[in-house]
Image (cartoon, rainbow, N blue to C red):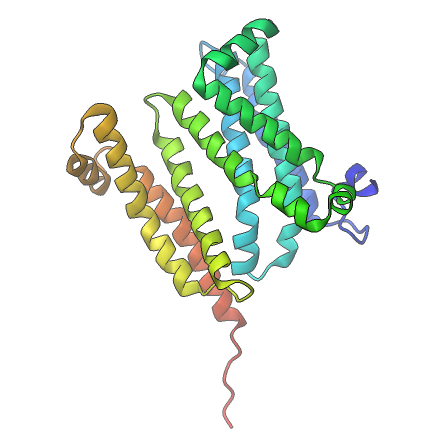
Length: 284
């Protein structure tokens, strides 16, 4: 309970610079959106834009929470795990804010809100994600770990992967023609799930960085092909035409390149960390 009151402290009770920085950083996106709303910088429909941006930050923070495990292992930085639960609770706080703004946009008419959630598939999916994150946030304390037992607690919290899928589908469906960031997020989620598949395959052994590098090399082409298939079925654009657009840069930097760039940086950091940790051979 004391740690909940002072989230910037670690389990020994000392101030953790990492937890303090993460705690402060979690407030920044919301404060930035609030500032832009107050200063009329969110366009002609500021409430709708604030609703959209807070929803996007929900997914980004959730993905940061999912990134903790691979980053902590690849960078040999176990203390990074200290902020995983904080990030998860932060994502819940943002999705509650997102839902609250939706209620405001419907003039506080809860009947209309409930009706829209039941009628519109993407809202139903988003509400399921909200409910799921609420369950995970409510059981995120050490007391709940002890009460449920580690095995049952871990089984429950693995539902975060399904919640991530629901969040992506909600984001993609409500984005309509603007599929750039949802496609990037799908690519990053695929990489995160691919890393977890590798971790499951190798069990207690460390995940070899060569296998992570292969996963990262496949991430860009995978999302390019996925995007091409989507445009083919949604707009009847030939798959080859979309793939050529991904390779040319005439239409800007496509999601496949963004995904590849991000995972390449992460993999490169892991390789660099492994090289620094490797003991140097001393002459006899």
